[in-house]
Image (cartoon, rainbow, N blue to C red; front, side, top):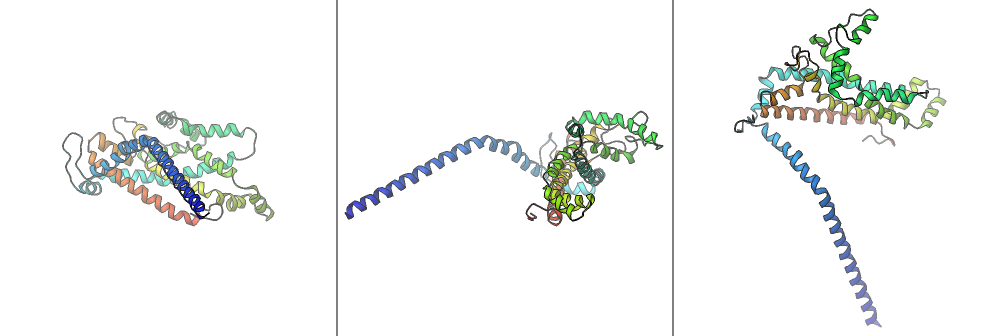
Length: 324
C-alpha cells in the first residue's frame, strides 16, 4: 500500500516538474517572439535616436564643422555661448519674451473657447469645427496668410482697427511690434487645446454643479470652485506642452520676414533661439557650437518642466484627492 502511495506521489511530482518545464519553455518562446517583434523598433531607436543623441552630446565639446577633423575643445563652445555670442542673448531674450506671453495667452484662449463651445446652443458643432480648423492648417501657408492680414496698408487687421479710430502699427516692419504680431497669430491656433478642454469640461460630474447650485453658488463661483479644480490636470498638461512647444518656435522667424535674405529681421527682432541655432549649424557650419546650444536649451526646458511638475502639487487636483 505504501509503495503504491509513494509511486503516485512520484508520478505527481514528475507531472508537476514536466508541467513547470513546459510553462517555462512556453514563456521563453513568448519572450523570444516578443523581443523579435520589438527588435526593429529597438534597432531604429538606437540608430536614429539614441546614437545621434550621444553623438550630439560629444560634438558639443568639439569644433565639429562637417568639413574638417573633429577636435576636442572642452567647454569652449559653452563658454563662447555666454561670453562672445551677442546674438545668443538676443535670441534667448526673443524666445523668452514669446514664451512668457504666448503660453498663458494660448492656454487662456483655448479654455475660453472651450467654455463658450460647451454651451447647449443649436449649431454648436459647426462652430467647434470652425475654431478647430486653424490648428490643422499647414504652417508656412498660415504664415503668408497672416503676413497679408497684418500688412500695414492693406491688411484686414489694420483696416478693422481703423474702423474704431485706432492707427494700426507696422506689424512686420517695426521691431517693437514683430513679436506681438507672432503672438497674435499663434492665438489663431488655440483650437487644438480647445478640444482637450471640451473633453475635460464634459467629464465634470453634473452632481457637483447641482450641489453648488443648491448651496446658492453663482455661475461664476460654480465655474471657479467646481469647473476649474476638476479640469486642472488638463490645464497643467496644456501649460507643460505649450511651454515646450513655445521654446521650439522657429519657422515664424524664418518665414514671416520682409527681407527673406535676412532671417530674424527686422533688427533681429524675430531671431528666436532655434533660428539662431539653425543658422549657426547650416549657414556658418559651426555644428559643435550649435549642438552646445541645443543641449543648453534642453536643460532649460527640462528644468522649467520639473519646476512646473513640482508646483503642480499645490494646485492640480486629481479625482479622488490624489495630487500626484
